Image (tube, rainbow, N blue to C red; front, top):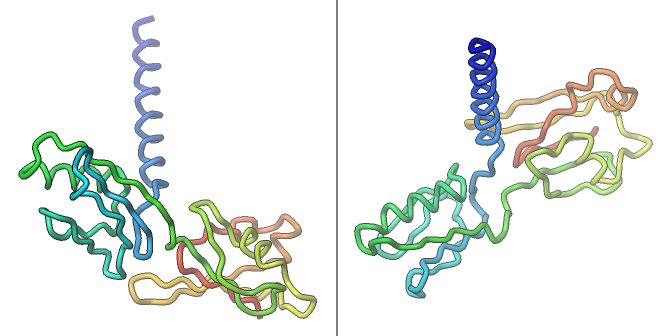
Length: 185
């Protein structure tokens, strides 16, 4: 019985750690263009609404600059609280994400409404094509490409709309990343 209880406890711990890793991976990270509000309770001079600039570095009173790129809201709150503690002991810091402007992808080519579209962390190729009003009758549905820029290099990811529409090769229906461009020839 003791072995069974130990096995159950061990399994539960593994599930918790895996879930935590998945949740951390899916957490939203602040990016250029986003609007954030940082406030310190009972200190209006230490409250700011900021647009994250392209380099991701914001300025804040007393602590100067912080690179917020790739930080979650909770991580930024901890950084600001820690850096402010030298000047304002026991500061109650609040960080809010006011506007997400970095989660956008683009659809160009033979779709009914090409353009820029807001995406979530769970948006797929088929979802953005639906946002774009679907393919026109003249689209080459088997030759769609997703252009993704990473580390200064552009990767072309093939996508066959016809296959996915028929329920085949569903793994092609990948999750989009901010800045992806779906090209429909």
